[in-house]
Length: 130
Image (cartoon, rainbow, N blue to C red; front, side):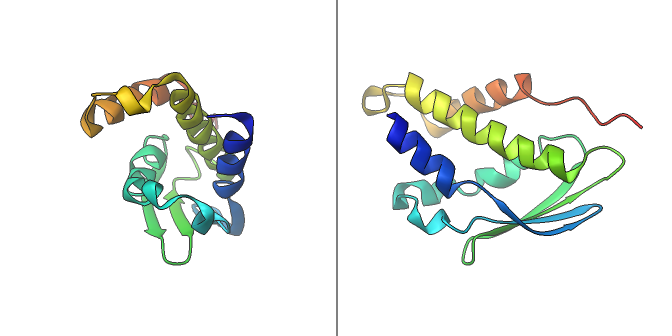
């Protein structure tokens, strides 16, 4: 994937905060509809990668309007850390996309999920200190 494509994906996956209360963060992805339709089957991974972050207790996705509600323990994490995690997840996905030869890849979706998860585990931030 080239720089233009990477920039486009980052643009589509850049959240805007529409509600930020302690323990509750609603993000809007205004440009998500510009993503290629091949990306839609992978939206269920949003919940998986967000709940990897310590302190995130629930994630509710509304793909029809492009919002994600994240419920979290404010004693463990903060909205700023969640937003940074979204950036890390996007960066990691783009790194993997650039490293892989997707047209010749024989790995199934479970293998890909394990690969992404192992990469993200290495990038998890430490829990917020009191």
